[in-house]
Length: 215
Length: 215
Image (cartoon, rainbow over all chains, first blue to last red; front, side, top):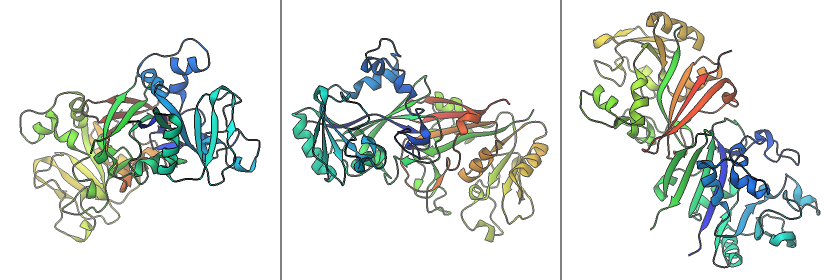
């Protein structure tokens, strides 16, 4: 059966998935690129830019699981654009005319707009729906493949609270952001419902995986 | 020069050093013993109870650094007893008549009382002082050896905020407590002042060390 998965979601040691002060110039606010240095360095990321090289250790081993077997992505409004993008009819996401997704992407927003078909197979659908509803839509679009929940922290938290995610990979970066959007709030006892594994990388990132227990 | 060190301080994945609902029956509140299972299993801990056996892997390698070279401990009022212990003139700590410390222990409290000399070399001193002041007192008592800051989270956080700690070992346990006392609040950018290292244990605990950078 198709699964719902989270990959490469980076948080700080104090649990923030993004910083404060998000804007078009600072997509992660005061966090800057620090949450994603480990990812940007990997062979997986290099290849996504058409470049050779990159690290091939444990960071890359996790990073490259991002795409295989995925048929659609769900993301929150906060990932699709900077605060206020809903007021800009020309905003089409951060990822340019040929986005990296190459599949249907469901953007959760209380202000839906018509779908946008981009180059390379990505279509953005804007939906005002419950977590369960958007998962059903995304699974249908994924046509038997898995669905990735792309973030941000709020969406992952909400979906986890309802046990709607089968697998989560979190990369914990040893920096303290102090402020921003927390991933773990309201998830007391998550370990009772998920098996947790932990791997430290020489890059100093800690990879944590959560796998929904069979019931 | 004598250093100020923290050892074996356990936090949950969401950063809580203790739970909610602390009492004489529940020293760690709703966290119970879950933050310390990794420690209780070690050879170090077994030996402190006069028992043989225990794990000898990375958890033990960190755990056993708790005592060597230490000449005095500083702890917060919240570690010394349950809420309200200041109203009980007979309260002498959690650790019985012959406490594990065997050295001077400085308890920070706004309601000091006369020092208590226990069996085995432990003397409890109760002081209402600034972090700097109590460190000076403890260093004098330690007589050239290092000083350990024993917790709880509030004390470690306050001391870290002022760069008063040279070395911190934190054991991050992959459970989500959801509520309690957070270690990381107000420490944005700590990584700029401390070198951070990370080691994952097969027990699924992640050991993090912070070493104050030379200036």
